[in-house]
Image (tube, rainbow, N blue to C red; front, side):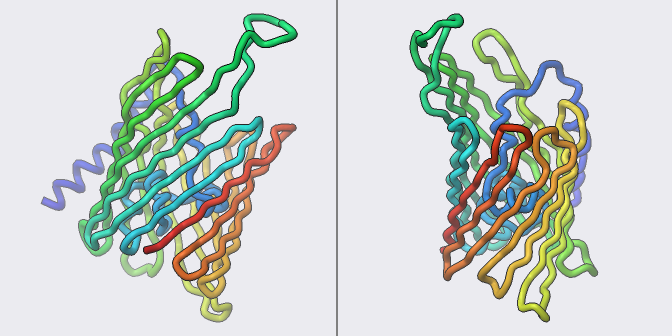
Length: 303
């Protein structure tokens, strides 16, 4: 039975990205690619294979199996032009399986509405996106975890809206004989086209392959995580993300990330602090030209 499940997952992960790439239309709902959790952002979004927290609902649903008992993550993100991005997620682990749920939302303050180059606006409107996700992960063997998510998607601009659904699939494999080394795959945002007014558009499907090495550094009383992801969007192009985290004495973490293949940003930095069952993380991602910087703050609670 386990071999049959593995075979099915392998076919899904290899075939569906090619099908998605062949579809017509341009991807929408770009907020689904913004990332969740200041730890992951600080590590350059290289998080597919990392032992994570409740934010793994976003990166790779198979990763939620590594949560101990209950984990809750809240994130606030400040973007340029008064754009804000929020997330609330929680995971409950039961040993061999775990369940999780999260909601993310992107919104703006009131925007001016005009029908031409007038001095005064004719009104105001708002832009709002959100996604609600339910996830499930299971440990099939001592080395293999698999997971999946179902998403409800909603976009509103002024008085118009679009609704849709999507699924995520993921797997993680702890490589025998190499302590702390994990490989992973994830297929995100797979679903039918959505329709806004009269225009149909594809979802931003992503196919990702990642690897992470998590090793103790006893001489420095710390722990080092090095990770890399290869990200292949359905609309073309390949991007490679690199991330690093050094955590001292289980309390203070420094992070650095680099993304190749992006036009408007590449590096990121981050800082994390743990106190008892709480963790506070911060990340900054500078953007090119005059766009400015984006900031993420996350609060995590382990119960």
